Amino acid sequence: MVRPSMLLALGALAATAVACAPASETTTQTSSAAPSASGAAAGACAKDGLALKTPGKLTIGTDKPAYEPWFNGDDPSNGKGFESAVAYAVAGQMGFAEGDVTWATVKFDSAFAPGAKQFDFDVNQVSVTPDRAKVVDFSKGYYTVKQAVVALDGSKVAAATGLADLKDAKIGVQVGTTSLQAVKDVIQPSAELNVYNEQIDAVNALKNKQVDAVVVDLPTAFYVTAAQVENSKIVGQFGTASGVPEVFGAVFEKGSPLVSCVNEAIDKLTASGELAKIETEWLGSAAGAPELK
Image (cartoon, rainbow, N blue to C red; front, top):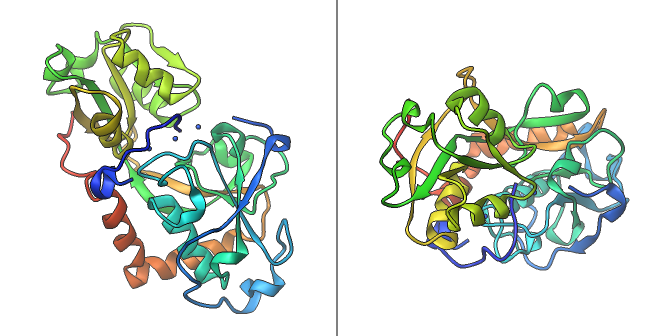
């Protein structure tokens, strides 16, 4: 995930960019404005029967700053931005009203680290991977994502038309992300990677011409080019080395009984078209980037 004040509006995508702290550093904030509950769960997923971190409240984790287009205004509780909207839609399907939702600040890689959690589930552009699934549980994917290469317009890398053109590029990427693994597995650059603790550090390295390109997920790439780095462009997008689509999933403490309930909510949101509608509203610009092969 992401960082500092990338907080300018960019239309749907732009109207609206990702990030590691121990659970003890978690803080919470209460919802201020968000969609209302859209349906009541029943049976094993009935709200009153759920084992929650705080009785009667659904505690959702994410990082701070909470970046666009995933969140808006660094305020997960406003219901704006793709992941905030998805979180409230899921909560509504589970029978929680907006006032029943509280947010916990959890660093990106702390979310999927082993151990007990202070959230019921976490949404923070966390890709589902077999290694992560050894220590936490994931919901079904709520977004399918590709990685994207961003470079300064007019640079040699900006003219790349295929992955082979990126072999000699000096690439910046955040530690602990699937972007980093994708660069290693798919691009396989000859130059040593520049790995940063925070995504904003990679973005600043591009801005200062310390790297030739950065690799981030595609929606974030649109934000980087529109709001963070002047005269930059998306060179192209690429999938995983295995060909298996990469998806973002909600993260749970290992063994959480809530997984099936959130999956049920995601299924309903998918079937009704609501999930697609939310994606179009907040990530609509994240399409059309050239495919790099």
